[in-house]
Amino acid sequence: MPKESIKSFIDRRNAEKTASKSRWIQSAVKEPGTFTKQAKAAGKSVQAFASSVVANPDKHSTTTVKRAHLAQTFSKMAKGK
Image (cartoon, rainbow, N blue to C red; front, top):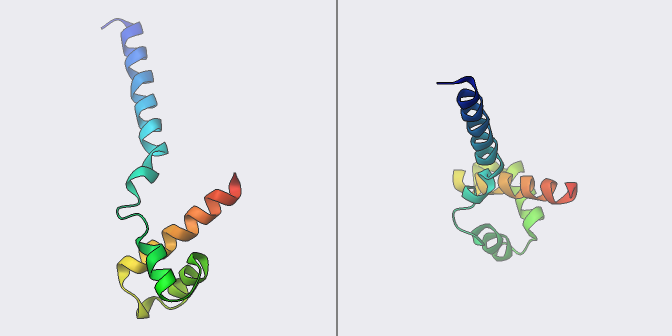
């Protein structure tokens, strides 16, 4: 292979890796609205429910705890904009 082909290959691979890292959020939410529904059923806002779940993880399923952490991450991301 000529050197230019190798360089273009490496550039393309780096671009693909960067793109896949920046799109992680699309696959993070499997069932949209589920955590919000749980929060409303508990009579709390999403962030208040997330805080209570993280503070008491033994009282909630592992899926709910993961969703709470994700909700807090999304909140921090929204504040950064």
